[in-house]
Image 1 (cartoon, rainbow, N blue to C red):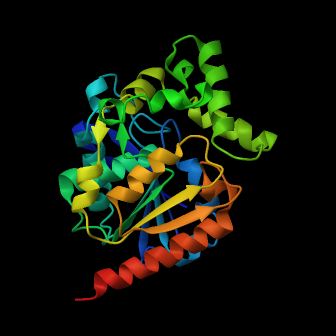
Image 2 (image 1 turned 45 degrees about the vertical axis):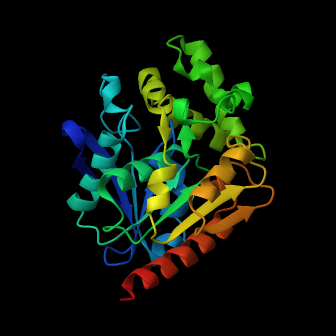
Image 3 (image 1 turned 90 degrees about the horizontal axis):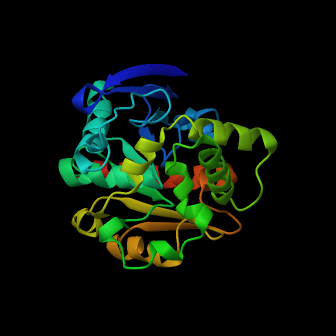
Length: 282
């Protein structure tokens, strides 16, 4: 597996992992809130990496990437969109498919908002919402369970923060994680400082107009045992992207790429190949 250091928006250093043939079609895998490139471990080390080049960055504030203190480094579209553009440019990626999990879907939308879809072959949103903060439907966030709202993950009190992080990680999947997987996920979640979590997640956005304007290939992936994203939130994404292909997974929660990797990888590969074929058609 290759490693890269990319200079993102405002000089932020981004740590990027790169697996698979360098001349293969590219999937740019964008992890979620308080996560890590290791979220995509099963893809980076699995059969998907034999068919595609997989690019998996640690987003700004996460993993081994820089963690600026200023909330403005996280609370708007510009830094996230600029980072993705910098990765595409810095690695000379030719029309990648953008795959955004959870908050990673927001980053995809940030990119589309500021750079459009001309340089990408398609977009896939995995367990993602399209409205948050003041842009969300009133009262919808409050309906989510306490471990999903994860207020303690913004706390500087470490016992409070750790307890909330453990509860949140457990809520991300339908079936209990193994002890090793739980330890790994809690560990890389704890690499993200509280100030990054707060500024990145407590944004106010409505991406419906961004997605409505995007007419390129699109896909939506959701687990049917999802605990993080409410059904009403899923419907908002479906309404904003009526032409998107839809993939749903019975018995799977917020992380289908981890919980059902063989099924997810096959579906993502089929979508990506169709998107690349469609993009190539005059």
